[in-house]
Length: 112
Image 1 (tube, rainbow, N blue to C red):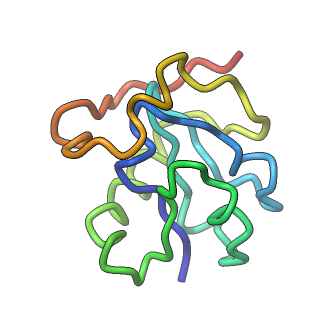
Image 2: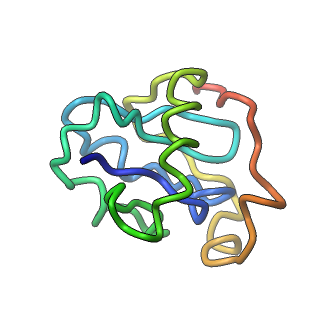
């Protein structure tokens, strides 16, 4: 089992989860983070740190459609090991519906 990041991270990207990960398994896209399921050790320390509540065990129904998304983009996006600054409007996007279909970006993040 591993944890995955779901669509509520899109345009929120708070990154509190990154600094607590003991194995540095987060990867950064332009407007979302993902977890590499092959590197995740299922420790669960990231889940409670996410202000957007966007991280779930991959066995959770909420996470099912994001398992492949996390695996794919963890191979394409840069690894992130330090918390960066979330978007200025992150709080406004927290909890919005249909973010994946309407706002997901395949572009990699730009590390600060």
